[in-house]
Image 1 (cartoon, rainbow, N blue to C red):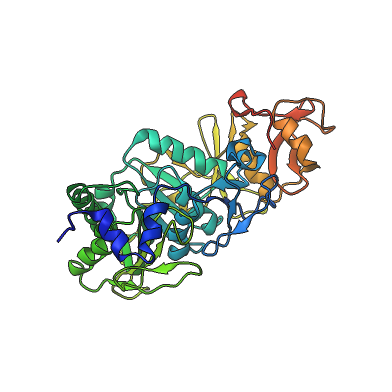
Image 2: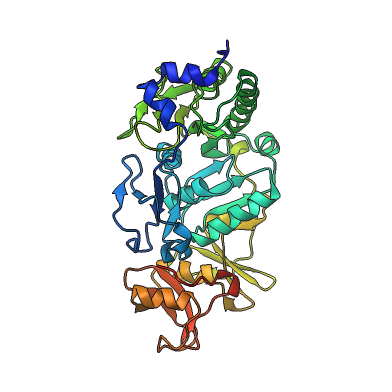
Length: 409
């Protein structure tokens, strides 16, 4: 039964509820996630580690990520510390197939893709075309080679390819941290239960599903998990621990984060385990495959490379072979034989020889300064700290005008 006042019910049940009420309005601590292969962060001031995320760091509230070179090179990704928790629980491994059921704008999809490295597949689903475009851009900015953005509805994917995934993430649409009526919370919970039931069909025997929200309301959190488990024989909630996190409110083994305790937005995350033998995935669970007419394997890499019209792509063998309909697949390396800026960055982070420049020179190059580097056109440029910039042209950095930013730090 729903409480008459959902917010008051949360405050009554939460640890230090009186403090929670004051903290719900924010502001929340700001954070970034640092790329594993693009050097140490520069220009962020003092950084404090996020306890539950190995590559997460809190930064000062007055820093705008858009003014930092690291954001534009993909070296640092602005992401609330709480939202880094679900992928930490899902724990993607190279070689796995992962489905991100509510993927846009891509914070968690890129986090999954970087965990897979250059071996695996992350299928990114979202209902809105505009949101999928932002998702594809973020995958490119981070140099993710395992991503496939599909317009295929989640319901159709679950119907056609049950059991196809080692892991599924459902970071569900939710009521957020605003005050909501009991009716609004109940309506959202119905949507969430329906999404989890669909997403669970994609999980192979013995696989896992992480359900998460950025809302404090138990009816969208613990009660959604209970409703799913009651209708899904054999599934179980798997107890997890993560440094710095609180336990859930119903002793499910799930985790919570609170504004007044961790300084983040309110958050809930639960790891669910499918019944069955982990090695018993059926043939029906495999995603459809294709022959992508590969041009070659990239030197020194397991990545495949292929062409479509004027575009040259690179991606994992799994993303190259997957026959799901897609709006973005792998990484664009070149357009009409000219290296794409993000493709060039991806090659640099994977070991391509690059001319190193100081951070202040890099910021000037990104803003459009010319004559600062003495290398041939087409040579790779990176910062001394390892942030990939791109390719040289006329003593400057070859970037489209839409990517130029002056005054970076």
